[in-house]
Image (tube, rainbow, N blue to C red):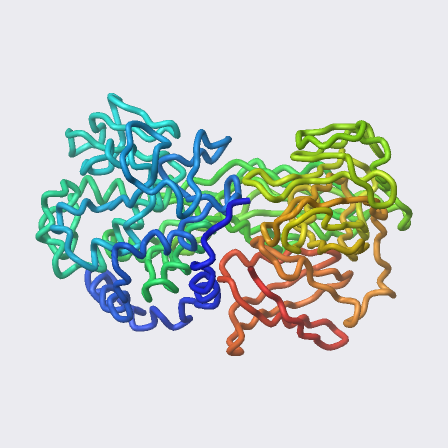
Length: 597
């Protein structure tokens, strides 16, 4: 676990409660082309407070922390992050700021995506967190003031694959810097933001080869074509960027409109309306049925701009939007022993919808086994007592268990496993794959050694289902109503809320039990997990329901429908905050509070 200076805590807590207003872009409605760009400039200039260059390192704690890859709170650096593996190095906020450097991993500093030399280091451009990002100092130096592009012949490559070399972009033949695909969209949107926010002066920043000396288009044609491709196709907006934009708004009072409204980029620089619908998805296949879920996969649609998501329909009625251009989806919350028939539609950024795919049908299996214990690990079979923290495996209930950063020399109810959550590598416990599904999960915890109280995350098949508290007392906690019917892998991990050596004992869960219709009424309807830190929550029900979500001001912001037990509600478009979830059935309605973290 990485620890930050306590002086930042007040600032961080202030950021957490600030949101971009729902009417922030209202004055831009109905505009297109450069008129839209000018109005966006007015919007994002109003309220923008220059916090100064030195404050950027403080801002990065909330705007650029790795809560998405290693999830360790380290500095999120586009030029060193390895999104598919372990980073070769990382930085802790407040430490190793440049400084001298002779190679990668020596220190990090502040990288201006639009070089400072182009605007003579003037403010507020010099300290604008939307385009000044934390990066490794050496890679920042190698990037120099080169424009961004795609490299043909490489002369240098960073540890994470960022490159310097000659351009192979049509229209530009000079030297360029190419970031990895994971962050090309982030950088493109930062550049689009800069050209919009500083529209009145950007015509003078021509020492940066991407700018063409105009206020309106701002970019060379080769550059804007490439940036739109990176923005829409290579690296569309994701949750980490949404979170970063919200934190930046809290920090300096303005937002990047191309994160909140990706469609604005085409409306400004490619204003011809997109009326071409994607092609229909093809080869839809259903597979791997359980008592409540079915896997779907299909061949991707094509589009003149780019497919952004797919609508999944069940029995001819809307079921769920995938929220991404992924061509696979697991439909959950289905009735057992029932044939379910699916179709899929493709959607693009202009909300053009394709014709329908082929129909694919699959029958779910029978329900669960009745609520008996499916797992009961008491940790008595862990290796001999040891005071050393290391990775440990042992044959326990159901097969091979694993713990990281763990020791075995202290007890709760007999032997316990102890994980260390006081370092940058937090301990975890992972079960084998155990059949029978899961109903309710129970675990005993105790803070064994010095540190702060906190909570543990409980994940089932990689998805958060709840949290377990720990403190100096021995306590047993149950997470009820998880209710998944497939084979289960449970992971227990620290969620950075505390810092301690944590003893864990007597982990068990009941098998999945299907609900009867007679047991299901408004009082039994549950939403979980809550609070939710993912992009979805589930509703525990066994009937067809309508769901409407309101913000704390009472404005309706999402309407959808669920059809059966454990249905998933996609809230990827919602920012962090408190919401009201109104659930409507034939018997009436009930409203529940939902917190998105």
